[in-house]
Image 1 (tube, rainbow, N blue to C red):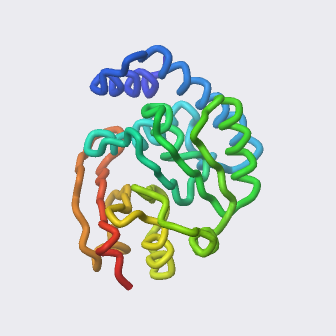
Image 2: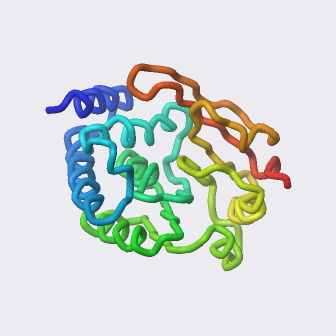
Image 3: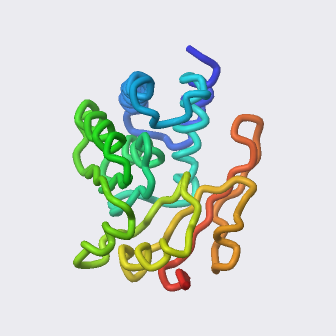
Amino acid sequence: MTEQKAIFIKYLEQFKLPEPKRTIGHFEHYHQLLESTNKLINLVSRKMPSGAYWTQHFLDSITVLECLDFSGLTVLDFGSGGGLPGLPLKLMVPDLEITLLDSIAKKTKALAEMVSELKLSGVDVVCSRLEDYAALARRPSYDLILCRAVALEPRYIYPLRKLLKPQGRVIFYKAQNIDDIKELKSKLLLERKDEILGLRRIFSIDRGDLKD
């Protein structure tokens, strides 16, 4: 077992999962799929060794569970790429209903294939720009919208607001740079700094505070 994988498994202990070995097995399968698919389609940085996925992608994705309860929620993963953070969160919270949104067709095709291989229900994969997806929405659909590798641009504010339920929130994964959200009213939900991930922060912005 690699050091990075061991760190991830140790991190999982705090969540007191009902079937930890089964969950780890799902992550092992996902890791295998992500590694093999990434050789064909650039889902995550190819400069990163695949062993580092355990901490830099999987652990980082689920840190939000330290400050938010995702059980039973409907969630949009905006700019999902390789399914991050959406798929790690789904593996941790099986009753989570999640949509993985990305505008690049080859990525969403690969994502759909991974979801099928993992035999996950309650996961939709959508190929669309955020603006186009919001324009088609008939009603606010999501409790949370996740932005892990996406900077907030002014053109995203209205679509995000339209897609959120009245009490919905956008969740931002951040490191040092928070320039894109500094003009908005945000709440710092989690801040941590360690040797593995460096500085990581989780911010929340309520739907009502998403203003142009």
